[in-house]
Each structure stands twice: as structure tokens, then as C-alpha cells.
Image (tube, rainbow, N blue to C red; front, side):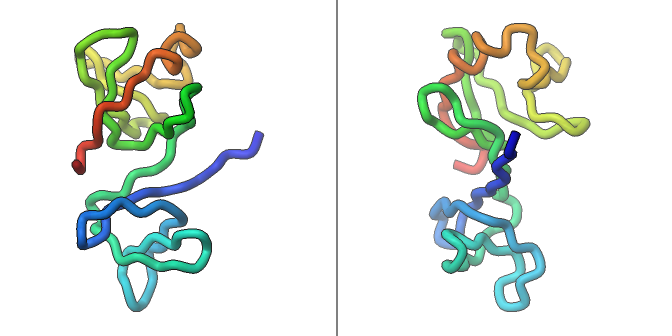
Length: 116
């Protein structure tokens, strides 16, 4: 299985950009290289890693806020102990290890990002 590793972050102008993360770019500090050739200076605190593509085509990113199973509780996609997931009732639940993975990813509705 090929794992797609992508990042998104906000530019200093507040615009989301997507692509490869450059952490040692001499001219820009942290930067996103979009489509292999366009380099954007970014705000390092807004860097989010791609997690997975939902069945509806939306991409889920680290830092995304979402609801699931038709509920009103808003969760935040987080990286913890080598796994993406979310916290619920002081317990970390890994998305890939969720007992009802298919139902979970089919029910996720992204409602924003912690950096919006």
C-alpha cells in the first residue's frame, strides 16, 4: 500500500497551501512546496499532516475538527503515540484501530480546523 504524505499550512497571508513540507529552506525557513515548484513561506504553527481521504472525497488533516455518527460533539484529529485519532472522555481513540472503522469514516463531517 502506498502512503500519501502531504502537508498543508497557512501562509503569512492566512491562505491554506498544500504540498511537500520543507523544514530547512534557507530562504523561507519552513515552507510548503506546491506541485513540485511553487514554494510558499508558511506559519510553522499551522502545519497539518494529511491523514486519509474520506468516502465523500474530503481529505482529513491533522488539526481538523469533525463530528461523527450524526452527533454534535466536535472532535479534533490529533497525532498521539504514533497514530492519528481523537480524544473522547479522556481516552485517545485511534482512527485506524476504531472498532467500527468503516462506520466512523463514512460518518465524519469536517467542520473546520484548529487554525481557522
